[in-house]
Length: 206
Image (tube, rainbow, N blue to C red; front, side):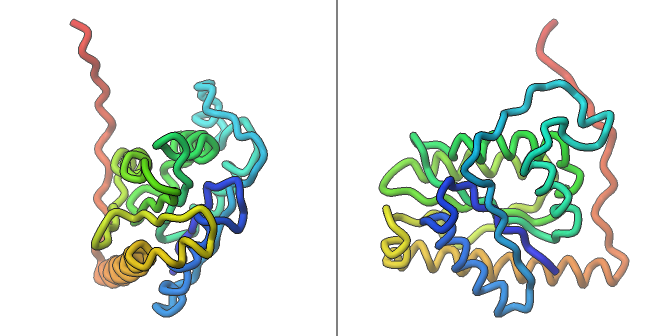
């Protein structure tokens, strides 16, 4: 089993990375492989709505999004981490997830996911709520902890001083480990993820 840990911060080894590393330790203790995927610090275009991905199977903007979607096909679970910018997820991770879920949502459908946010002081719950919406629109079981998955601090060493926040991340990783093992046992017993119904799209224009 493998979990992809997405670092949506422009700082490769900053606060978000530090929180993801705490989850990584727990997954390792549970015998689960992990990979930290850094979104990077170069500009990431938002989705331009061209529909090319529906024709060729990947985004026409060939950057880290396509690289991630390929890796997502063989992953069993995901944690998407982001710093809090203006009470929201970072612009880079928002653009990244818009395109990853639109062009490659099928690679993640049915797989457990969770969000993790890092902030100096406020805005964490708003950013956390924003990220969770990607999972709930893509048929992904959302894994919880004993509090919202947030850590506080301006520097990595301050994140580690947030004992409650770090504990929340540990519990999250343990809960995801448990769920992944349950899903694997279910597969071995012939219990498959439900077949999707054809999507019905409506609007409210009458």
